[in-house]
Length: 137
Length: 77
Image 1: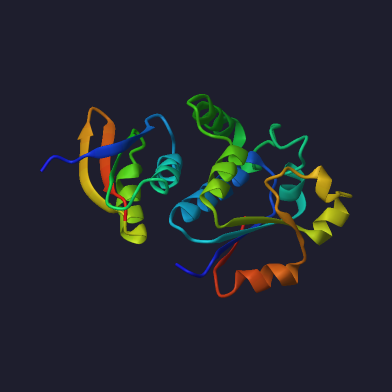
Image 2: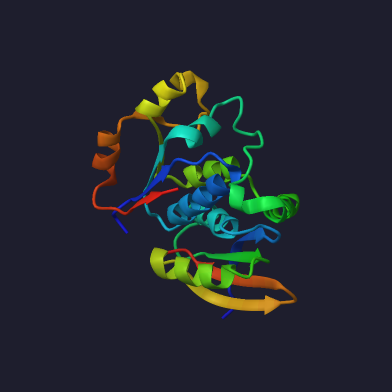
């Protein structure tokens, strides 16, 4: 259990971020360290002023998928940002923004939600990943 | 022996993985050896609590189902 789980989040749609948040929270509940690396559109979704907005769904969701997701939300499912907040409360979850994506999106650290712990490059990400699995979402 | 439950986590209506996350948060503040009761409606919680108990060492001492509500009693490691 000592090796961390390393999630690279690339997609910025709510369904993929929700799946990533669930994986993060589950690992954190088991006491497994989790490193989350935010790239491209996933990083864009972590902008402080937009994190609670609707970020859409992956194209394969279609209309039926949209309805299914909405049903789960109206039944009280926690949003992905809330799920990540709860996971961070358990400890062992570190969320870093990819520095290249920060440049791409013209972002400064102050533009990001407090869920994000810092900015790092890919080398630092791999160093912290150790021998743990790397998952790309 | 009567089990003394010191805290109840009401996770009814919460979807995966929130029942486990809430329980992990609550159990941290409970003294070792004390019992925590969890109520959940997520069917996945049956396998989840078994796995969580095995991995974290918090013993699953009781488990039952009543009308779609799953009840777990865990002993803090």
